Image 1 (cartoon, rainbow, N blue to C red):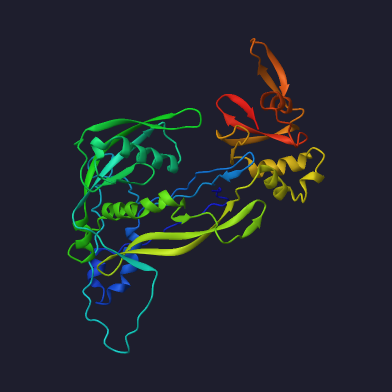
Image 2 (tube, one colour):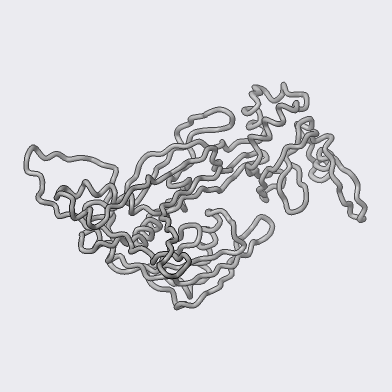
Length: 413
């Protein structure tokens, strides 16, 4: 996998909601005139990128830029109440309502034709889904890691989850078809993920939030109620995004897979990935899944040396026998800083690090304090360390090192 290059903004357009009086005053017409607004109102969700990244010391694998989040909200203004001498917030507004106008009749004139559209009907089971709030510690993990944690938790705690297959949005919301046997209490579970050389332990807290009715969504689509069940639409959206999020690389509202059978380089170590965008939308008395083609730019998975050559327009690395100039180093640093790399000199244990800088000095001159077995600390160059430790003679000792984030220590690769 590779990393995302450019931000993708999925913004929902703001719309002005009609009041009940305005709707009642509208002329009777086709319900299709109101459906676009209903569809827009129904998609209240947040998007966030992702971020999972891979690369190599000799393989740039992934690093994704952040994606923007959009949300639709309302603002209330403080109003002074008579006789109070102060200001207070008015009572909260009623939840948004809509009333579908009656369709006078179906079309009778002209010749009926069949249209193909990128909308697919969703068959919804009747009943309820249960919403749980999930907190993972340590927090600030990428969505991909959070999904791995929840997946491991479900298999490890079969007494709690049984045959249930929960869906998870990658952050805090988890849904199940049947309630978990924890009631309204807060359940804390310990989850262990195998790490590179060391297992990682996470603590997951689960708390029941609400029971979400799918009947309410069905009634709203059929015009039997005026209240839009946003919580049901959000739950349905999480359900439809769960499996694609596990199988593809999610970026905002879209999903991408690594190129297979095609190659569209953009230069500078970048390439085009194709995927699809999906969203859940209400239509005439049924829920639909809208799917469209999407494309964005990623960093290629390749050796770091090849990536540097593409960025600096070096045709043959063997011709680069001198250290990088300051301008070359600055340009290369801007491109690789923040990407994740994977080392390859430790056999099967391929640890991943995030690049935070490029050294000014080449590997044959860059030194660091090395503690010997007898407790003595000496200065050692990176090139000499690789030769003594791994019996490896660097192919390009005249090139700089990558400085990576690793606890409080400086690590060079």
